[in-house]
Amino acid sequence: MGVISINGNKTVPSSEILEKVIIRSGELFNKTKIVHSVQAIAAMGKFVSEKIEPVPIPNEETKRIDLVFNVKEK
Image (cartoon, rainbow, N blue to C red):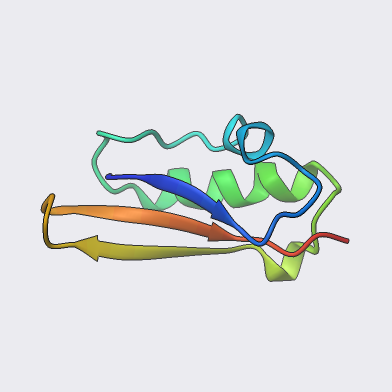
């Protein structure tokens, strides 16, 4: 994994959301951890569950996969 970031949050700080993400930068791509991270973000109750979308983005410069969690606040 490369950089992990959040997109679409307006009132909830990214740092608060990233605390719920169990996959970390530097780890190998792990679909199970990504799914569990989506579930943990949904469990916060501050986002539309169906609108939490993890988007892997290949980063040619670092040769890693960056991960963006798109969210929509309720």
